Image (cartoon, helix red, strand yellow):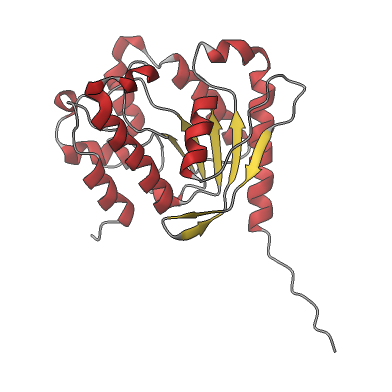
Length: 245
């Protein structure tokens, strides 16, 4: 069976570094290359120690949800009795809202696909190589998959994503009265035009989450409804211009 461009890339980019397998995504898709939506954070807290996972082939099978392996089962296995992290629970809330809009072709990723307990740990010398590798993974999977919608959560994420897209993204809403924040982006990505819609929402990670959690459900629902609207508009057949005689 021929290997997809995405899988070939993932196999090359997810070799262990600092004892962990880099985490390119969480998804329930068997073919992530077909995702229309990326949910984007900064970097993930839960590491995937290579010694606890097994072979690299086993890991790749989990990433592509095949051979009775899956991203989520692997995550839950490694979290053990601690259960999902607070941020994971909030990402699940966003996914539930996307599901209500029948948007299930989703990849959850990070602008830096390398795990540290706290995002500030990326500044440590020992994590320099991991940070660089994690940033490269994100840029490469973005260039291959080219989702139509990006939902970036958190100011730091939006700043770094803006660098990747060569644009300045708007700030997220700061209260319930403000509209959902988004931008239409047109940028070259690996030499080819790329024009996604980028939504920017407040962080799904504590402690920033605690500031807006009371109005988060309404805001997440509205964000997902607008994402559905943009995708529907994009899929609508374009009208034929009348001929002039």
